[in-house]
Length: 536
Ligand code: XUL
Picture 1 (cartoon, rainbow, N blue to C red):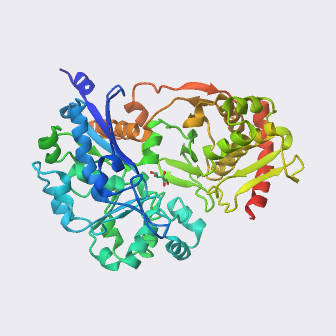
Picture 2 (picture 1 turned 135 degrees about the vertical axis):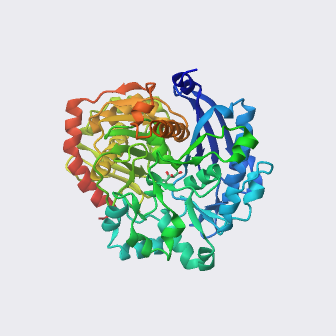
């Protein structure tokens, strides 16, 4: 068999360690998904007592998960993959995706335990005692308000911190979590030899040693110099002492971080030469899974909250909106991520109020009104918004002369909620440098053609739709393939060269020039009215 044929036989494993589950996706070199398996933390590991994979603490702010649960889940997942008939011996490389920002705290004993993993015993029994903090803070935690304020002050304010690290201080970001643990449990901090992210911790289990943090997930910590892709000394210093040693190095996301440990070879039948490629965050992995490669290629996920993320060439981090991360497949590039709290639930509320709960009626009403809504603009805030930060809730309607009005006709409300959401996305993503050239719509509402048409017109970009379930796990598998190809070539290979099969998406909407022009003209008014609504 020649090397080309051999490459065709190879499989690549992507893992996704999300809040609620651990999933595996195995692809072949033609990018077909050939095996999948999943472990649901609540249902499959009930002894950890999680709800939705987390423990919510009585203060209403602290949210944690037991890292030992993630360890236990890995063996269970591998058992399920075996039952699904996956030939582990053909897996040439493994990579992974982890929920962002969460941290795993390891005592000095952890390193020896990882190195000496015994194939005869489950992981859980061998790693029980290695955590200096038994409950890992996760991204849903919002208990670090004081540390965010302190660290922003120490680093010259929110904009300065955003320019340095890609984001202003966010409560879930790891640096602020580390400052809290150092301040409130100094003995635990002192007992910690390594602080890993969820992603790098899961990679550690595979290499049987501490695995480095990758630059893309490292960008979610408020600790990394976004442009240098290395720790920012000032950010480390104002967080906790001797932090650099505890964090270890940062590596590019396509780097090989080691070989599959003997544990997986002898217990689960993996090949001893199998490579482990740096694990990364779930949003960076989704960017890879959706193959948003060129600057401006954007995904808009219309889910419970609406998320927009994209590849970016020139980062413009902002103190008021969004995040800029290092790009997981292009060491020179960046990605932007913005999350709007008022997504599907808000659209559904307007559908229920104005369209009797029917999407068909909602769409018919949308079709009955012209783009631009005759100048009407509405803000529909069912929940306090995070992009931009608006604490008040309610509906705020304005006529074509910017005068507040009590009511709109139902069809105008329907158009105003959809237009308002996309205008807000365009306004705020534009402020961190995003100019969508092509949009991939995902998530529940992405199948709604009427909504997707407004998206195309507001952004002036064509919209493709194509469901990519488990985009983070698929993205991790693509990254495993990418890292493996780079290692094989002994040089960086462009991601699109490593992924030879075409993406399966279909055009859902083309932008209309006149409508786009109208929305561009509306944007300034929208921004001014948003200021009024937010009280800014
Ligand atoms: C991103 C974030 C979430 C988690 C979810 O900043 O906090 O999307 O990554 O797992």
